[in-house]
Image 1 (tube, rainbow, N blue to C red):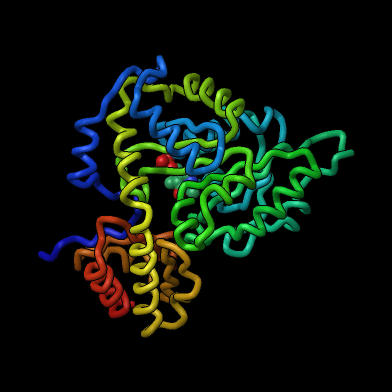
Image 2 (image 1 turned 90 degrees about the vertical axis):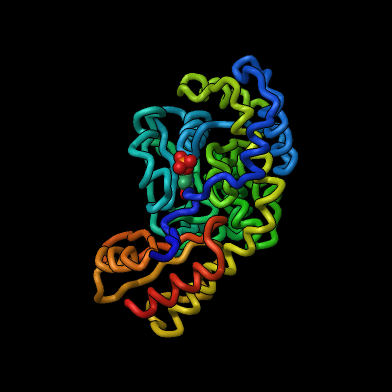
Length: 341
Ligand SMILES: *Cc1c(COP(=O)(O)O)cnc(C)c1O
């Protein structure tokens, strides 16, 4: 039985031996008292990298997003999002429940909202009923193949939001993939939004955690909501240490994940040009159109060969590269997939 190549998600990474070492030797304290030195170091390091005043460590990306919406969108207002956004599709209606907001969703090519699409989605300022409060963008787009939001588009959305008195939130779960893929710094992206979150638990390879970044007053409010949402933790420096390790050692290497994703797309496209466009693979996510073959059937056949992939709908496969799969594994996955398609 060959080794399993698991391309279902970049959340599957397991902490490496040196990361575990960093976790085991982390200095800790009670973070609810603000006394965990490793958490404080992670938050300071992240705030600095993002060029913002403050950052907050939270248990998950979903909680980060829910805190962002709670802080930036008053109850009874409307949030503009792309229809396939994680916040819309994968968070179980949390924003309706926890923040009492409603969503105005719009479809955008490759999941990238433009300022023009946002403008069409806003309630007129003079409208006496529902009012828009917030625009939320996703960097990179999860359901649209890891596409990078161009900095210019983010700046145009920021300009529109300022003119209309709106806040902008970035679900930056994979913002480091965007930064490495585009060469734009996370600070330049962060400068276009009121608050940005990102996961250390995805391609960065830490086992747990996300951070929220913004100005000091915003993060202070976020801190209060983290507590109310049950996300305040105690000697959590053992987890923050993994995040610090990931930021130091696992950011530059994302180029390898991107190269592997592109390689998979090229191998598959070499035999099945209609299945995937390699040029559309900008980061670590590959979507494959399975045509007439049922995606679920391919998932099972690939699993028999030790290749695990995800499906999104009846004729789409989703492959995500990460720290725990190497080039040889990706080659095996791509060749097997090309043969089975
Ligand atoms: C994974 C993901 C999240 C949620 O992160 P969890 O840590 O799994 O809660 C949020 N947004 C996007 C775009 C994601 O891909």
